[in-house]
Image 1 (tube, rainbow, N blue to C red):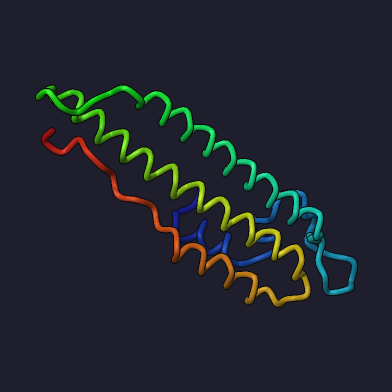
Image 2: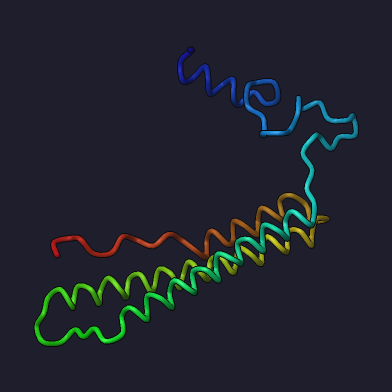
Length: 145
């Protein structure tokens, strides 16, 4: 096995350099300039539907979390109740944002399927904008509590 620099140079060298998309064949294409990997509207739509299903699952989880929270009070000076309420709120916020992220991603995937005539740069832009809008949330709690 060579050094990291040698291996990285080999990976960057492109087709035949040791890195190919699974199922892409030998990279030779059919001489039509399209290569071996192809896209379809159905695949993009199915991916969007699957991500949309995750959003629904997250909403169900949030409902269960809210049901479990009912009847718990934070009064009376019980520190564990106050801590539990803080954890609940952080998870509620996280699940709401994650569900929104899935919904937005579903729209982007389905749009990519509908707009297959767009250039690759335009499709990439859809996902870059999505990444800007939905940043990972910072860790909550655990610091000296």
